[in-house]
Image 1 (cartoon, rainbow, N blue to C red):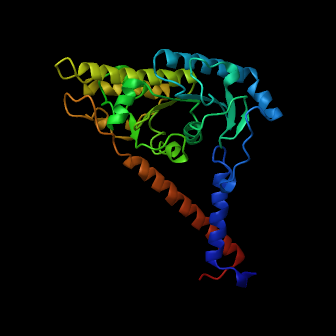
Image 2: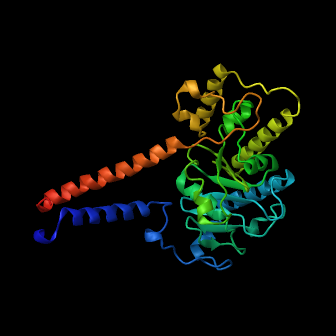
Image 3: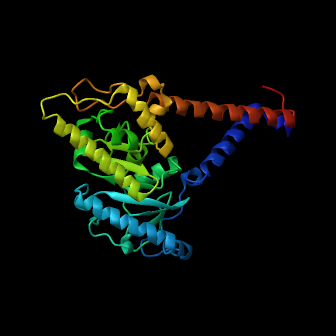
Length: 330
């Protein structure tokens, strides 16, 4: 046996095992990308139906219906647009169905899906755009709810390829902070869903170019608050641009107080990874009401670090196996 094994062969086996173990973590999807067959709407599994009908699920379903009505009343959704989802268990999510106005939702209209998008319960078919929500749930364990909608003022920024500059509205700095923007991708596709991944850890509000906005929070109600705050900030900046005077920024010395408050609330902010002297750095020219979205270089560095950590792990385990088997180095 020793004569048949080489370090390269052992390393390949270790790498395959490590990859498979990572893929089977909660929220990572099925091994090898093979998902279970989708359960058709109206054919719920008994255990899933029991979970979907539990008191906890019913409370979430009522909250989703209430928030759906609020989004419609504030004109943040139109036609059958927008979607709301909430985590029920570690691996299941309650979501709104396709082709229904959020003004007309009832608790009986909602669906239960797993993190691979398979529908487990509900008489109506889940929306294809749930894939975007599921990527956020898998990437951010503290995300309890996700809302995607087309709030007009935030979407106005999204279609111009700009984001609202920071440090103008105190509430925005506490609850949202820097807003990210991702390039346009076709809604409902996996590419669109994955486009937010470089940003979602450090931002709870992301603009989708030529599409709308997506926010995540610990509850459905809080995610809806962030939608409101984001759109209100965008509206205020647009209105201020008509007053003939440059908007005044929050004094740089005071921004730290707002971020300290934000940190106590456990909310994310891309600035937490920056030196404090950069927290109030202007993101737009004086008087401008829009800024170019920042590149996520720091996120790319963290992704590269993860790759390097994985490689070190593979090499360390390979070294131990080679030593234990007495394999001669190549």
